[in-house]
Length: 350
Ligand code: IPM
Ligand code: MN
Image (cartoon, rainbow, N blue to C red; front, top):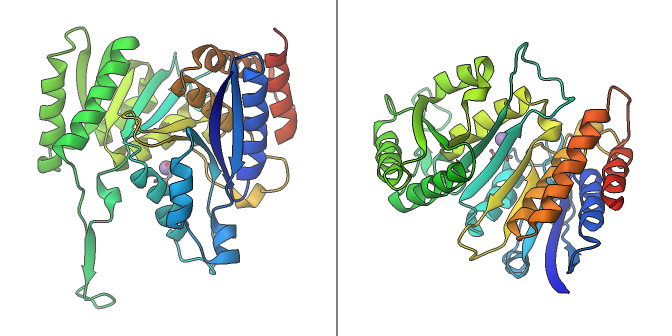
């Protein structure tokens, strides 16, 4: 059987609890497959920083590079915790991983599963995929501040969009649209952000010529938020930059039943470094350690991981098990482990 080396970064807060269930489901889903997962756990995150002062040492980053994939829980300290500089762990750990490992595709599916209550009165069928750019945009930290703390302070955050970076994400989005319902929506704000906006628009127009079967649509980000609430069925694949993608995927999670169900993959489609799979939610320190967190988002992230590793059957079985479990959940309160057990046991029956 094939050995797959998997790095596991449980992180902070509810991270370790949801990751324990994700690993349980990963093992149940692949028990009959000709693969063997070798797991190595890495302690990283806010707690680790408090204990050691380390965010992501170069040596650890190099070790992470040697794995086939990474499963990531959640990171971050409690909001009121003043011992940790705000945003440090996010930038120096999570974003550093995405940037260093060239996770240029941040894949975030949004599907309203049967049995899940959407906050929308008439949600209709919601099943779309956001292909968020993962290594550029306003996230690169290109900017600065002058005259800090004076009434004349000037702060800039310059969004970086390269032709290479935009083209590779747009191409990926078209490939995915071609495999789905063949509709691609570019979301941007090119009426105001003309330089980046036009690069995105021209790139979409150019690649569209290679995909005559894919219908192309464009929405400004503000209008896209309206349609996501009033007519989410219109979306199939959305392609957008790092910041718009961040914002719109929280909305996408909300309309499909909440952040407890939203999965993501930070994917290096060129295969030059391991891809990383993580629930969209954060570390939720307020409910940490209480077995209250829903592990479904982490479990669905395992499905994305399996698909990425070419284990499509196992990926489909995880998705089906989740769909079945979710459909029958009702309103009963379950612990994190009970939900993980329920999904894992659906995978054991074959
Ligand atoms: C996400 C998060 C991150 C982001 C933060 C924690 C840096 O909100 O994964 O969506 O903005 O990408
Ligand atoms: Mn976010």
